[in-house]
Image (cartoon, rainbow, N blue to C red; front, top):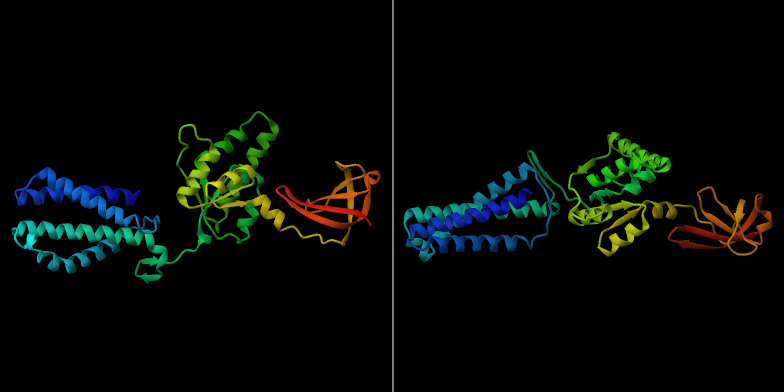
Length: 330
């Protein structure tokens, strides 16, 4: 917002200077305003070619203004040697100097604000440091908060990044927590509890984004749009949201997929103890679960359902829902 305001003010200042220059030169004021505005738009168009970053530090603005003023003073003698400028009055030449100060100050601020991650230097009260992609904000989805495992992941220090909560997600959690359905109410309250524990952790930075949904936009669409605008990574356990976000070019961290990847691998030929809890989908199969929740399908074990058996792993299959192990009775 600060940079957009600076762009608007810069264009208006260029138009005003164009009118003043036209008045001094006894030319058309409308032509001067149009020429000044066009020049301002061209300069902003050139600035858009720089990699876009967002920053709002006051020291950045002060540093940019100082550098712009110095650059304008250095460029002033060369500008006064232009034949058209040299032929004008002292007032017109003073306006040219003002324009140079505006021009170089704006360019300096724009470049510093948008490319500060490419620099690493320190001066008193001003510090820039390169921030890697690991510092990109993590945008939390409702499902990730209800799931709760994101609390342990970020509290462990494995993800050193600020957490971002969208206002519609908070409102959705509140709606679920106020539901008349007992299960939904429990899930919503769990999500709010996880959020409170994240905010209470002094090592974590949790920010609330106040942007609201646009007309006809659901929460998932809002999150994808917000993640693209802020260049943030979306944290979710919703497989469908993950697929939509990836199509839109948004990086996604699926907590459920991460948990599946971190499960210890069961190697082919490994013998393990397993309690069979139900029959399988195919004739003769029995199904059990390892301690980490991995489902195991044991061939020829339907008659042993309800018992603890020794099984030998024959194959593993990674699916979107997690890892699936096939085995036979040992």
